[in-house]
Image (cartoon, rainbow, N blue to C red):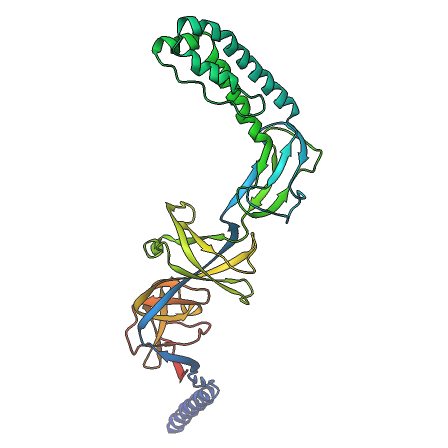
Length: 370
């Protein structure tokens, strides 16, 4: 009996020892998690110092001649003559003939109208001698000075209402104004240069048939030009007529000085901009030339200029706070080509000098002052 008890106790001890050994062996096989090393991203920073930042508006456009004339014909005929060769690039003095259109047919018609007027007045003289003797000398003198080659002179002023009605009843006034109309139209057969300038476009040659309303060319004054640019409405009040503007070509190799000539107060509904016309003159300028203008608008007080790449959602910026990134809302004042002027940063604020990919609030970084 005692022997059975001893064997039972030994069996229990063996089983317990086996379980204990198994648990120890199983615990020794557990994989220990490695310790995670904290990684710090190195960043460049800078300290904010607010100041008055000048806002220079850079805009561009094409030069157009200030004095430009599109030449059209009001009459029909053959292009007969020109003071110079009617070709692009040819210079004409003011008053010189740009185009002379053959007017033989119209001149013949004008002479016929003048002859008709002359005959009517001659037939009127006997009646005037009898009924209006006081008016007869004036009309007789008018007939004696009448010329078929020169412009018809104004009719004598009637001395009374009866004389005026009598003259009108004989259709003298109608014939007179028909002649004046024909004379006015005759002047349109010769197109003269309104000022000294250059022909930039020539669409007809000598001997060509010209029709009414046909465009013949373009004529400009090559000494004064205007540059039309679009400027944001927020700076409309700052662009005063006479304000100096710096101009340069696309390459930036040549510079000119201009002035604001006109400001169109109307706002373009699509772009929310206004038209500004800058007057400029000087050597090397050509119509159609692409130019850039630098308008000194104003100075934004208590602002800071940063790279546009640093902005998050167009109005936020990462700042450094005890080696941790935080985000701050700012107010963009003016966007330049590569930078932006912002308000809302306090002096001494430490910000990123260069954008880093994957940045987030609370990110631990190691700073290097830029």
